[in-house]
Image 1 (tube, rainbow, N blue to C red):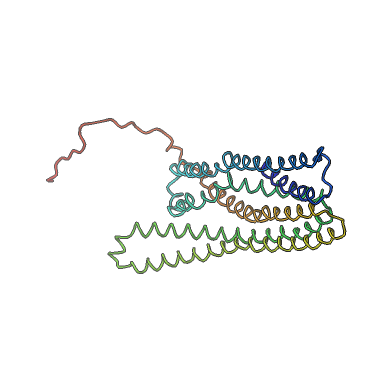
Image 2: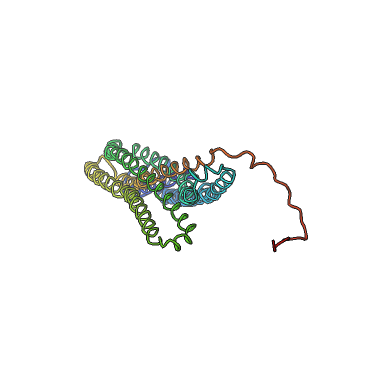
Length: 329
């Protein structure tokens, strides 16, 4: 479904260039030419119509068969946490898998990991196939213009790799600080009576605020790093478009490129922005998701108390609910 969408996007854009060439009197591929102009236009219109129809069907398909897996995997990951944690050793629950850590795993980490099975997978496939189909089509139209575009875009992967490396470190630090905050919150709730007796509410309030602020600062750093994908990919796309527009105009003026092909190249370079923009988010979501999956895997692979798997004694029904004797002694 994703590949069908990508293919129809490219076909629709390419067909638009053929339509422009048809109306301007330039040559179009022979397989489109019919006995008269009316029939030729009907063929061009049919290609445009069918590309839109199949594009809609493709989008419906990947949303039904792939994207919905995100919503299925989230509850599954949470269920697996409970299935494993309830058999853990007591010292593991006190040390490595505290309440705060488990709360973070069941909410933040499952929330990041679930996208790997759906929307992130769609984005990765879309980036690869749409980018490849677009570049191949551009090569068939004009090699020189395509090389100019590729030379400008070649800088982008290095910038994205550098940002993603910084982002994943900040994300890990953010998740660790969130676990500390959740664990501290649990301690505060459990000791609320003791705090009132000892008059230490202000101390714990200050401690909670400091922990929350620490998480806020680290999380914002990770978010601001992720946002950098937008201006970087956008600026590279603009530079690429300006280079393509300048060189394309020169080729059209010197009759080295038809107006329809020039329009197609402009449309394709705009279309190439989608996978470029997605690339940053896909890498970000992929790195975040795999990091969360590693944290979840620590839960799934942790040793368990085998005796807890044994069936306990069955509870028998009785009429006596509570019985007391010798209360006066």
